[in-house]
Image 1 (tube, rainbow, N blue to C red):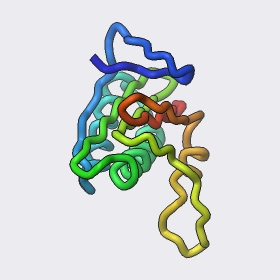
Image 2 (cartoon, one colour):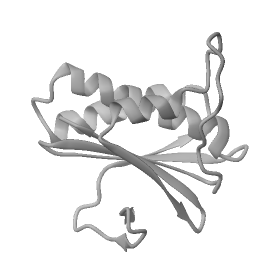
Image 3 (cartoon, rainbow, N blue to C red):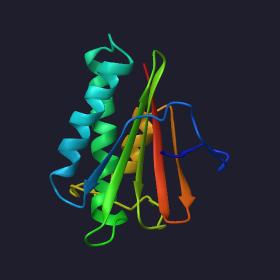
Image 4 (tube, rainbow, N blue to C red):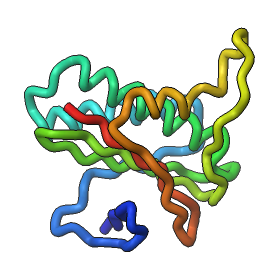
Length: 143
């Protein structure tokens, strides 16, 4: 069973845990995570518009890419949990390190380092919960 950690940091076990996918630390993992998220949204919140799917896909890509690059140990895994309803989609990406994401200074010509700005712009809210075995970075996209 998957634990759902709320912003309060207190674990709550839902009666029906949301779907989860375990991914390797691999450059192909963001693609698999996007496909997984799309299928969960289709199943749990049918009728979600294309813009919602695109926004969720971008948020998932950013969170999983960061977890693969910075948040997981070599040979480690990344877990994605997606929960959707008629009002929002919540994404959690869990990795094996406690290092929190941080904003980086970027120059105009930099091609990386703007992920947290994207989360600020695309999500209703997002945050980090440190866990005994790593951390969960979560984000909610409103419909």
